[in-house]
Each structure stands twice: as C-alpha cells, then as structure tokens.
Length: 638
Ligand code: BES
Ligand code: ZN
Image (spheres, rainbow, N blue to C red):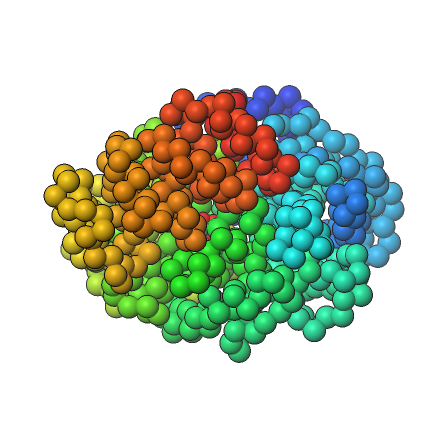
C-alpha cells in the first residue's frame, strides 16, 4: 500500500475544501485520479481509508516525538508533536494531517534540527472525520513540529473527577484512540495504514503516574515527568495515555497490572492467568513481539471492555467479577498482540481482520487455559450474539468487509466483524484440520508481521496458501460468500455446548409452571450458564415469574455485571419495577457501551423514552464523549 503516484496538488486541495460529507477524502493508493463524487452504489475501493484526510501517497509519518502536559484544571493536553516524515513524491505538496477539535498555535518544519515557522491552515470540518490541517513544507523538509492544545471535549480523551475513580481523591485521564480519535489529541496521519515509532514525555501533576502503550517503568519516580518509548512501529489508533493514582503489581515474569491501589490486589488476582495465556498463545501462534504485557485498570466510565494498546491493554474494572468468569476479555486483548497490533487492518472496512481473528484466538486461548467446556460455552455465547445481530442489522451491514463510506465507525459497531469473522475462521479450521490451520496462522502472523493489510491481501494470501494446499476441502466461492455477502453461508458450523442445551428443558419446565424456580438445581452453574439461561427467556414474562426468579436468585442484586445486564434487559422489556433502582444505578455508574446501548435502546423501544432521557441526562457528566455521542443518537435520534 505504499503508494508512490504523484497526486495532483490543486485537485486534492479542492477535494478537501469542497467535499460534501459523503465523499472520498483520500486518493486511492496507486491510482492518481479518484472520482470526486464517489457513488455508494459502487463497491468501496480496497486499501482506501475513507476515514482520513492524510495524503499518505505523498508523505508517510515514520516517527512521532510527543511532549504533552496534562492540565487537569482546564482539561487540556498541551505541547508539541514532532513528526518525522518520509517523502514519497518529487513534488512539494502540502502535508495534510488529521485533527479534531485541536487548536494549533504554530507549526515549524525543515530538515533535521533546523526548523522554521511555516504557514498552515485548517480545512473544512467534517462531522465524522474532523478537520484537515494543511501545512506548507519547505522543499525537502522531513520534520514537522506542531504546537497545539486539545479541547476539553476531545473525542478521544476522558478527564475524570476524583469522584469517578475508585479512590475518589485524585483525578484520572485516559485516551481511547480507536477508531479515529487519535486525531483529537495528536495531529497526525490518523489512518491504520501508517505505522510509526514514538517517544513521549508526559507531564502530570505530582503524585500521579502516567502510563502509555510503550515501555512503562513501574519504578518511575512520581515527579510529574514520565518518559516513554515505543520502538516498534504501530498505527496511530494504538497510541494511548493513562494518568491517575496508579500502582503496579506483577502477575508473572512478563505480565503485571497498573491500577488504583483500591483495585490492585483484586485485579491481580482476577487476571492471574494472564502469563499462562501469553505463554500458550506464543507456543501455538508464534512469538510475542512486544516485550512486556501489562494491564491498566480504568475507572468504570471506560466505554469499552478492553482496548489492546500495545504492551498495556486498557481494561474496564467491570470484569473483575471475583471468579474469573469474564477473563475472556483479557485473552481477547492479549490476542490482539498478534491479530491487530502485529497485522493491522488497512482501513476500518477491514476491521474483521483485527476482531474476527482475535475472537477466534480468544476462544482458542480460553480452551488452552480453561479446557473444553469453557471453550464450548464461550463459542456458543458468541454464536448467539451473532444470531442476535444478524436479526436486527440491515443486509449491507452483515458483510464482513463493510462499506463505511460517509459513516462514523463508532455508530456502525457490531458483533459482525467479531463473531462472523471468528465463525468463518472456525469453519476453515474444521475443514483443513486444526493442526494444519494452526500452522497456517503461525505463518500468516509471520508473513505480514508489522504490516497493515486489506481484506483482499488476506484473500490473496489464502489463495496462495490454504486454497492451493487443500483444493478439495476449500473453495474460493464460499470464502467470497463469507466475506462479501450478508448472513452466514448455509451449512456453516453452529457452535453449541452441552452445558447449555441441558438447561433448555429446565427453562421450559419452569416457564410452563411444571417446576418452581427454587427446585432448579443451580448449584455449580457457571456464569456462562446463568447468562444462557437468562438470555434464552421469551420476550414476555409475567410479573409473578419475574418476581419468582428475582426472589429465588437475587438477580437484581447480582454482582456480576454481565448477569445484571442480562437481567436488566429482561426487566426493562417487562416493566419490572423492583429493578428500576438497580437499572438507574447501573446506567449511571458504568460507561461500557456494550451494556448501555442495548439498555437505552430497550428503554426507548418499550415506551420509556422519558425515563431514558432522565437517566441519560443525569449520567451524562460522567460519561465518556463517545458514550454520550452514541447513546444520544439512540435517545434523541440524529
Ligand atoms: N479493539 C476493540 C475495541 C474497539 C473496536 C474500539 C473498534 C473501537 C473500535 C477491543 O479489542 C474489543 O474488541 N473490545 C471488546 C472486547 C470483547 C469482545 C471481549 C469490548 O470492549 O467489549
Ligand atoms: Zn478486539
């Protein structure tokens, strides 16, 4: 994808300033002329990142030097980003970077260390993509220094009040760059096609610790200045900063946890199998190439379960259940060290290459560490999630290589790239045999290590490997159907678990009134079984039934957030009032969109829009900007 065609400077300029929201911001690699009016009846072009303004055919950022001060009082990050750029063109077009709500005060550029002030301008803002920053470069310049500050509402940064943390004494900051939010705290080429190394100095109020997706030093003095280096080239969406009252505890030789002291021991205990996970993944899928693997436990407003920031996954505290029942999340973020961080999707259309492979690997890691029954249950729950999403997505959004042109990737987030991607790989595994498939995966990770690839690159690789080796077992048309057609191909595997299917007749008997809840022998039920049991309940339950379940199993008070969520979904659609307080508490204390979106949608769909609005407005000051955005769409419409 390293394009080298000269792009027409004036044409690009025009494209940026006059482009209505839905057009292509970036010229296709290897093709100079891109139609100004990209029609969405056409297929999206492979390898084009429709979510970046950067002119990556002309320049590529190779290294970033960051120096930022975290000003908690004003909720701004301010300082300088120095970019080392490689020139791919003989001409001298302006350098175009991605920004969003960033205030640029000065830009200097030049060769080596002799930088001079240069002209720059901000282009037209696109609601999904932010604002292009156009920089006039002196001839031959290979370094650009941008002095800037972020806005308090930066989409990729959350500033937390002490009240929102476990310790309640110190503020907290974390960034979340994926998919296109790095540009809200660093002006750069915010596209997964560009990989860079970085160094950073982060200045914090004293007593706080800064950590990054880089080489963290748990011994670093808390003197307000932290230095980092990420020597491996990573895409911008993996740059991450966390600042808070953080301590460190080792879990194994290469693994440890950063967390507020109040959570540290519980987190280290819950995730103590991380080192084993790391080892089995290496044994089966190739070396771990990122030195250490640590976790950063965030406050509960973190909008995701986890984020695979290299060397330091960011993790929601809501998975610390006390019984390791939700640790598949750790396996998932760890697996991204291979699928995602080592081999990266070239554009957000190719997200399934990150998430589908990772979901597949997660299941495998869970089997290695916890055995077959856990593996079956994790797979079966994933399959049910997929079925649920297939039931309520438009056909076009069931395609793995999804067309995101003109759309905000955050709004289109679903289980399709995860679970359909994983099921596809599972089918390949079944067809060629596990041993052969593992060999293929190991070679794949090696072959494309530290590269960003497209769906088409992957298919071509399949053509040259598995399809060639097993022509009698695999066929190209079916692979095409999996990736480019909606739904699931006929005859696809349907993962089930005996531990689940044996619950079906029990649920049935209880529903028919042939059995009392108190007669159900739930002794030894795993979290997964509880979830399956609850998620399999019919749309409508009677007040008596709800009360009986709740009184017998204390579901409204469940300490397991996944169980609480499943129960609250039932409660909302059946107007079960005794759960209202818990619902409000849940929605105001947790920011994970996997829970919030379905709950708010459920409230809206069940005629409780006023209640949804009231709770949302109450919770809003504590929500992450992303959480505010995606849930407002649900509650208030576009
Ligand atoms: N990389 C994702 C989170 C993400 C994806 C953020 C796309 C923004 C855009 C992360 O690895 C993830 O998948 N998290 C899941 C984990 C779950 C599937 C185990 C989550 O947060 O729920
Ligand atoms: Zn993931």
